[in-house]
Length: 573
Ligand code: 9G3
Image (cartoon, rainbow, N blue to C red; front, side, top):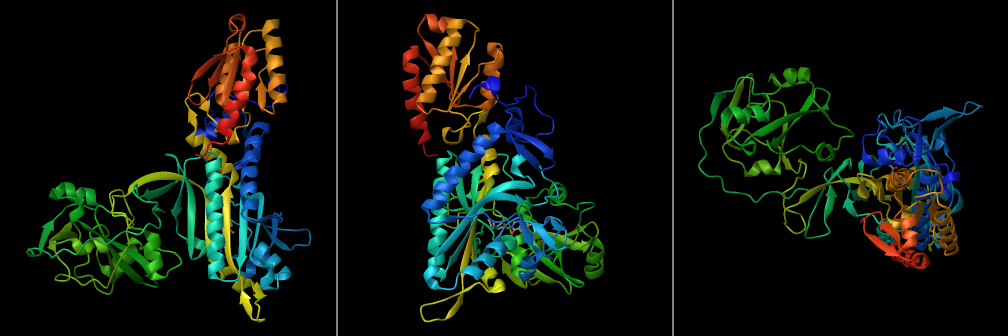
């Protein structure tokens, strides 16, 4: 393609509103433009990247035996009412009416639609296993869309849905999709990691997220450097500490702790470590019912784990009014000793503590040398805290490390959650009716492109991995002499002949402008053609990622480029 005839509106300055580098660089490279909050146009350069990611996804989905179809954007409300999801989701689900005033939503995902298709068309076990997928625009009305394509409201997703006869077949299909995802993200050249994830609202029985490791990732994961174990901290299990025989128990004592409402204030005042403090978190768990959860002072509560333990749909900290009403203890000085009519849960880490410190259930008072069960009873123990760096890996015992990740894919075992609610059944070989066992599998296409930039950029712009680069090579004629023009045109022709995707910067611009734009756009190889290089029969080829330069006679450039591009195309991350 010729730059002089291309719609690639690069920007010199940093756009103010972009908060993460991928958003900033997608705007500066002329890949996307915002239409409204969280809603973007994909300009020609951006669409080339999107299409390349889609074709890698399509290739691996087909190889895994999935069949592509295309479901509608509009979903009839009736289907969502069958699964009780029409009322479950709030404003994130965009609802609208057609001219006959019938209710629809803009599809945020397509479990209902695809299960409806299945129940109408599949009757026999002979038609299983069946995996269907689409690559299509979704709409989720995020309350705070940000970071460009990373968290948009309208976005392109590949979503696949599998239907099997039984758990064994479903597990095999899940594994096949999991492996296909590993191949997809390797082929895009991304440094990624599958992590065990919480099944969250969708309520399946297991799920994995595919994380691209990047500091701007919104997800926090822990991983074991010595094994494949990795988990989203929302889900990561924490190994209970070894039970320690408590030493001598010191006598319980009240201490005055004026204004020491937080663990930090308390530690500063009493000159103690946070690991010797036990926080008492009070949750609203029912009508005028409060549950206390005890967490060691240097740990963080994991509300998803607490919620799951209590079998609650959601969980919220008790309001100060409710705390005063139920416990007569002032918020900030609540403790378990003498706490009446409150169920007390404790994280396993508390069991290894002796002579610890808790709120005194009195303003400006704490208790020291507290021990359980001497001073108070614990109703239930459990894993209620967030995993953190240094915790022993549940797999190898090695200290866990943390990393931030961008979730680009998510695979779920769904079981019969949707097939039961929608009567999606098949007849087995004896004519017995069974609910299909389902799985669902998503990849954020735009988010994958954004993650690739987060992982592959420098201060000058994007450094595309070859497999998803919008163009493979950029030719930069840096003077306007006839000799340079001729040489550039000839090389452009040669590369096109060899099926290399080449961008010729034939604009009437200074060399500096062309260098800046080539660095922002991020094509993997830049070929600089100037009068001196021609005279010396030595054209410069620059590798955008490494900065390495090679000098070659003009008649050897096309061959060198073809080899280098082919070699980088098949790199696996
Ligand atoms: C909604 C809205 C937002 C949602 C959902 C439904 C997330 C919803 C979970 C999934 C699960 C999988 C198939 C592809 C992979 C992910 N946000 N989820 O179900 F109505 Cl507004 O989408 N679906």
